[in-house]
Length: 218
Image (tube, rainbow, N blue to C red; front, side):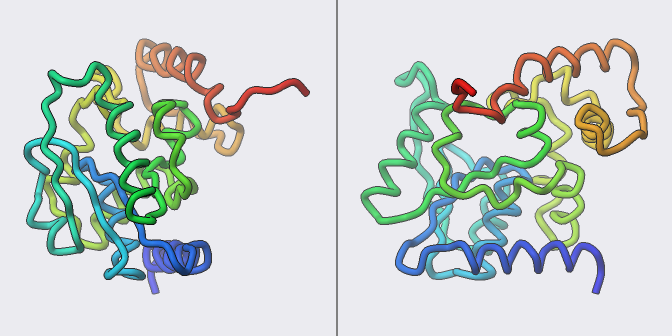
């Protein structure tokens, strides 16, 4: 058994142990690697109870997602809503309440440490990918056969998913190394320029408080 298989088995065991018996599952799908891995994992355990929801006109690699489980496409006009991120998560809460589904988030360890996740996404009840760095998610997606276009999308800028152009230019492994050094679990220095390090330092300063929310008196 490979290390990748061991990680996947641990995730599947965690899902089995934590999923409420009488609730179905709702997973927001973006068309990226995080949601692809999360959707695949839950469909391995509960294929009849898992629903993926995509908000927009066209889901990247729709055929791959549809081959893994049930996908619902919700076409929305971005002109109607001032904050689409807030609307998506509010709509997920509504669907969850109406259909008795638990809301699964796709946040990974890289996003959690950096604080690059949205405040609206904190409404998720379960975060199965929280112990995985982004580079690990990419490796697992390749291992399970996620569509190449989905994997390649991780190197592209997407401000809606918290990945602006400046961040997209830095390999995920180097971002992860930078964060590992920041939290003291790795002495290996990231191979990035001084400008890129300054950029990551600024992101970390601005967003890392989110992992301690809600902030309260000692």
